[in-house]
Image (tube, rainbow, N blue to C red; front, side):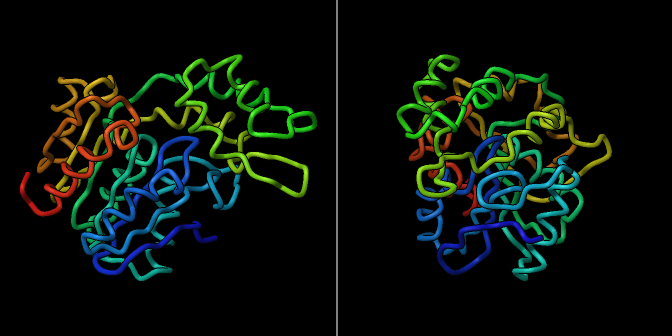
Amino acid sequence: MILHSQILGEGTPFVILHGFLGMSDNWKTLGRKFAELGYQMHLVDQRNHGRSFHDSAFSYKIMAEDLVRYCEHHALDNMVLLGHSMGGKTAMEFATQNGNRVSQLIVADIAPKSYPQHHHEILKALAALDFSVIDSRGSADAKLGEYIPEMGIRQFLLKNLYWVEKGQLGLRMNLPVLTEKNTEIGKALPTDAVFNKDTLFVKGSESGYIETYDEILIKKHFPMAKLATVDKAGHWLHADNPAKFLEIIANFLQKEI
């Protein structure tokens, strides 16, 4: 089973992995920008997300193995790898186990450490979507609004809506498995995992996912890591301040950071 992706542009391969409950569509605008810089962009849907296959197995080790198969299928080597949040954990796992395939690693707003579970309300809201009565994006948004006041988060989640058939909405994500395996999302990188090539950790200035003391652990796993901050941005830093995010990543790719 090969992961679904959107491939844009020509040049050096550059793979982007989305975060939990996201999909490749979240990265299309920035993907086009990176393609203009001379990269062949691979915007990948991870298992149980987007248009990729659904499966009951779900862990970072398994998702990294999915990416190995994807790279073999598309003959990708010496690639740039960027992952956001959950995708960042997958990217770290992949790079430390398959360093020969990765030339530069970019991790967006996540550290190698363990995180407590914190998606309960979002998963509860998604489970409340009864598609036997919900027949429009507006009615789905109204239901989500009973649990999630932030419009930006609701809009992010609503990207998962699609027409299963005429008159029947559904979610692209595999919600039952993602709910059951939610504890996997917060797990730390294995203690002996190391990647000894150019690495950039970039965080949002208003996000608490990467804290100052995390730099010690980051450097343990990624000795060549550099850190940068996207101003006026939270956890979804690439959406909150895309221009600054693009500038920082472009500078790193061109070895100006």
